[in-house]
Amino acid sequence: MLNGNKMLFSGMQATGTLTLGNYLGALNNWVTLSDEYTCLYCVVDEHSITVRQDPAELRKRARNLLTLYIAAGLDPEKNIIYYQSHVPAHAELAWILNCFTYMGELQRMTQFKDKAAKHADNINAGLFTYPVLMAADILLYQSDVVPVGQDQMQHLEITRDIALRFNNLYGDVFTIPEAYIGKVGAKIQSLQDPSKKMSKSDENANASIYLTDDRDTIIRKFKRAVTDLEACVRYSDDQPGIKNLITIYSAVTGKAPADVEAEFEGRGYGDFKLAVGEVVADRLQPIQEKQAALLADKAYVDGIIKTNAERAEYLALKTLRKVQKKIGFPERIR
Ligand code: TRP
Image (cartoon, rainbow, N blue to C red; front, side):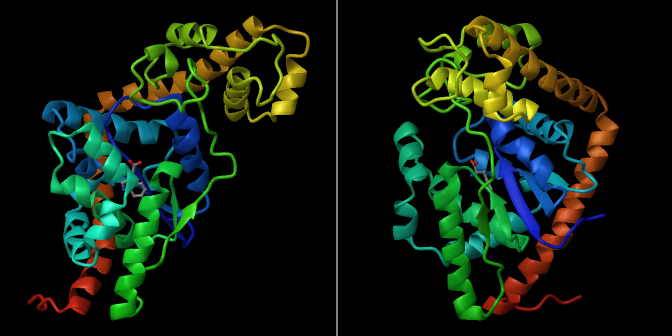
């Protein structure tokens, strides 16, 4: 059922609509990694409530994200695909690890500082201890590798620090996880301002391709993408707009940037933008169709949700019980 012995954990929040950047930078690589590792891909709904959410919307988005994982090619029998909130061990271990994490460490987290500034009316304790819950996610499964973006590196560092601190006190309880920095985990920039990352929270809808966009929208957004002055398809830092489009085209087709340049030699931006729009639409369409089919098949998806939560819980409890014993909680009477 599970392949390989090395464990991999990653998760995404079900807030906002995922973009092509999330797909090419993360999800698409997860599919590749699932051949190499035993993978847990979690929908981290407990992290999401650190900022206010509409309950119905959160529930809907969580299901959309879980089905998207599968639609994007993650096999729910080979990988463990589940909701964080369905495995109580995450919250239990997070509580314990809170007692092994210092206020000063958490105060240094840049994401906390950013989010506290953005949500000044709701700087709750959960937002502060967010990295501890993330540490619990990772450490519960004795994860060896964690594919994360640059913005999460600091959280991975604190996870390692907490794990080392705990191991120093109680022996080798936790595997110390490493960040998995992908080979090409393509970094996709905004279509309207190539100096910024493509983001699901960009106010300008033309800046991002959403994974829910239909073909016409995708092609229109690429046509409007900001390009440069040279009017030739060349991969270079002085043409950041075109460079970004080449990165996208390369990531989707698997062709090297130099081959893309050769393919579009002597052709203008217009042709190239249309070609990028088409390959992206061709890639996303079957994913969207598969996701729609999954969302329509309630019984099948519910079955996956149930079995995968059980598989995750089985692994999580092994670690949690060991931790509880080490720190001196009374033994359970069976
Ligand atoms: N904090 C991560 C993010 O916002 C999501 C996340 C939660 C995560 N738990 C994790 C990522 C564990 C990797 C491993 O992107």
